[in-house]
Each structure stands twice: as structure tokens, then as C-alpha cells.
Image (cartoon, rainbow, N blue to C red; front, side):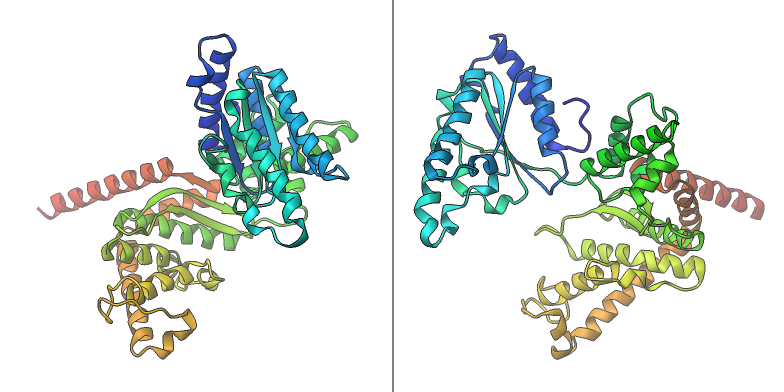
Length: 436
């Protein structure tokens, strides 16, 4: 469990559960005191839900009883399915303390969504499963971990107190976690001195299962050729014919992402997690929640920070690219959506304290709305331009470092911004002394 990377909150839960299971196993903790009895893991395929259950059992030093709803449903008749469910719970009880892992839990239908001739069939299955889950005191030492790709399909009763009353979502690993996952699958003997960051950046958006497959295939290729695994072989498996960014585009993208960093830092907008370049472009990972406590200042800072990428290109290269406007999730689309919501939803625009429900295509039909949005975006662009012009040294330094390494952490960026600010301040003092 300690070696798992990219699991976030699930890892914390697992470490606590493993420690409690060990304490229960040796008699230091009673089952009544045990508070990690059930967990629902959700997330896309390949993020390691099954690996989590294996690691939990290994860390706790208890058996793993693994099953799936698909196995239960393999029986030809309802009686066979019900018997399979009872059997696996009985097996777990007999091997307690243990981990009972149930995969594909969404295969058990939500009773509220069942229709037609299968209502009675599925209702009996769900009811039995709920009965066995609720009998937690009758199966001391059995920790139930269930996994699903579709948490919205789970019957709400499954998540009630005393059953699987804790749900944790596992997301795809970020760059830092991917680097650690590559090292885990390569082991310490293969490419011991090679940085894992280039591999992680090439595999951005992929899962731990993908990483395991890349490494396994690269090892196979090296074995058949009678030589050691190389970084190039692993990269070839990741890219599958995809090419890295050409130098000119990489330079532009690095400037673009650096622009986001400089402006968001200057305005105190959100939390900048990292900057990265990958084969399809770049990303500035900014965390910001536009909740009910957000103010107009924060919303305007968000717009300026979103537009800062394109403005940075204009400042450094003389013209911005169209990359900021590709798709509904693009910088320009998100900035426009915030500006529109300021006017229509948040009651902070020229229409005053009102809420107007309107699709984005209706903007031209509401008098003065489109010009108001365009003006708000123009002011935000000017604000970003002023910051980037004043802090051009920081922009250039961050862009240069990002272009060279492909990745900058929050700490890297803070350090560079502080260093550049110190240098600028020192130059200003020196100039003032020369004037005197």
C-alpha cells in the first residue's frame, strides 16, 4: 500500500484500514472499534481499483477474496446467482480477517431504475446483497471493498451507513504520479539513472494499467533482441507512431503556459499545481472553485489568467495562435463562459441583479449582452498584457525552463518567480543609485 502512487485519498484510507486490520488481527482492536469496514472505489477503467485491493490485503497481511458481479451473474438461474453471492460472503467470513473485493458493482442494478419483466429478478439480487452488506456485525474482520466505473448506477441503499458508506473516486494519475508508476513497473534495476519525467509527459492522460502495458511490451522487445531496455523503446510503446511537438510549436506552447503562470500568480488566482508540455500541446494545471463565495474580483482574475496564454504569445512572438480557442474546454471558451455568467447568472454585470437563463447561442438576442461580454474580455486581456509586460523577465525565464524540461512543479515556479523578482529589484536599486 505504501508503494501505491496516484491514489490520493484512497491511499490514505487504505493505509489506515491496513493498520487497523493488523491491530484487529493481533487482538489490539475490537471489531466494534473498527471504522474502515466498507469502501466504494469509483473511477475510469485502468486507474488501479483491483491493484488497490491487492495492495491493501498485502499491507494488512490478510487474505484477499476477490469476486465480481459478472461472476455472480454467470449462473443460468436466479437461484445460482443468489447462491454465488452467499458463497463468496461465507468464504470471506471463514477467512476473516480478510479483504472481500467485489468488482463491477454497477452490474447490480439500481432498483429505482429497473423496469419490465426483470424487476422481481433484480430486486431479489439487490435485496440479498444489501442484507449481507448490512450484516457487518455477523462477519467480523471482513472489510468489503467494491469497485465501479459507473457510481451513478449504484443503488443508493448500497451507500447507506453500515454498508459501503464511504465512496472515494480515483482519477487518472498526474505527471508526478505517472513518473513514479513508471519507476515502479521498471523496477530499480532497469534504467536506474534515467529520469522518468519524459516517459510520464509522453503518457499524460493515461492510466497505471497503460503504464504497465508499455513497460511490459518494451521489456519483451528488449528481451527478444537480447539487450537491455532503453528509454527510446518505452517512448515508442507510449507514442505508437505519434510524434513529439516540433521545436517551434514547443517554444510557443511553453510561452503560452508560462503566461498563465505569471498572471495567475500576480493576481493571486487559484492554486497553480504545475506546468507541462506533452506530445499534443501543454497544460497549466490551475485549481479554482467558482463556488458561492467567489467575488467579482476573483472572476475577473480568472478571466485574465485564462486569456494570459494567448496574450503571452502576442507579447513574446508578436501574434497569438488559435490554440486558445479550440473546443468547449479551451481557454477562450472558459473565459467567455465566465464573462457570460457574470452578466446573466451572477447578477454582477450591466443587466444588474437578475438571473437570465440563456444558451450561449442566444447571446446576440439579449440587447447589449454580447458587447458587454466582449468588453469584459478586452479589459481582462489588457490587464494580462500589462502584467506580462511588467514581468517579462519572469515570463521568459519560466518559458525557457519549461521548454527545456517539459515540466515545472508549483515549487519550481514559485522559486523562479521569487528569483526573478529579486533580480529585478536589485537592478532597480542599482539604477536608482546611478541616477544619484
